[in-house]
Image 1 (cartoon, each protein chain N blue to C red):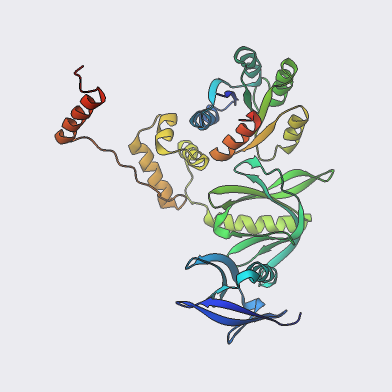
Image 2: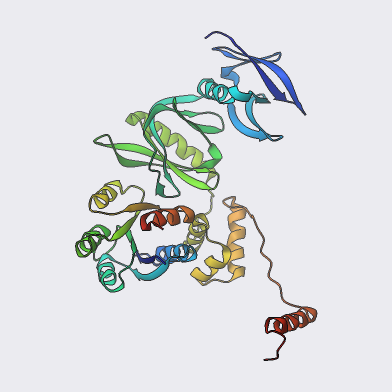
Length: 120
Length: 269
């Protein structure tokens, strides 16, 4: 079962993603509400995939991505963005993000994208 | 353009053979001559199990052109009465919030007819009914090597939400944005939604069902039904399924006791 860490500063978005991914058979190993927490949880939980919001307090998604990829160059991180953040997304892809989903999203597409990244 | 004669089928209670003439100015269907300027819209529909081109011009014509269907539809889409703007477009750019990998920028037109918006290029004919438009806003995208302001338009295709991008001169972009905003404004509910209602709307969009929504938000069925009713009354949702909740009668309870015995291999305990 693919282990997922969900990172988003909005509780509603975390719940939504958790529900979608759990229903699709992913194992939700943790939730973080900022980049700093995401890095800590990544070290502890060693997820197969991280869904990473970009705009967050404390440490944003780009910095968290850099830090996680520094710790684990094979980390699979899918950025979760709003429309209008193309520059951030491009930067994230350059820094090693494996994909991105744009909010608001539809469940089947999110599942498809994560399965593709996880190579399930 | 020379006149082209085609043998088609027309639906008028039943399918009948009809001769169709098409030239640069219009189309003649049997005895009816219709200028392209008088055609308000065309669309592909299904009729009696056949893919049909529906031509709206005072009255509706339902036609099937067999193997020439695609060619005729394309010709009509480019020539009927419309406001047509030369643009570059990327459609679909996103599908359900996920990047469409093999999509590319195309040179063509963004065209607006009475009831639809169109992305037209030599490769693609995409018709978006105005009722299927979701949003229109400016966005910045990298096109070639340059950062450009584009128009991001979301629209429905079946149950999937598509985002398409339009690149055009700024004055055209402003014009299109204004036009699309006016259409969307007419479709928008007058009443403002609460935070809870917005969350529920997002969850329905995402594809969650009632029981999931209730459990995530910690609300009961009555509350959710009340909000669903409001959405339906506002015209922003429609009922697709009514779920039933039941309780057992004494007869049902006895039956469950019998079933439990069977499941337990007929042994007590």
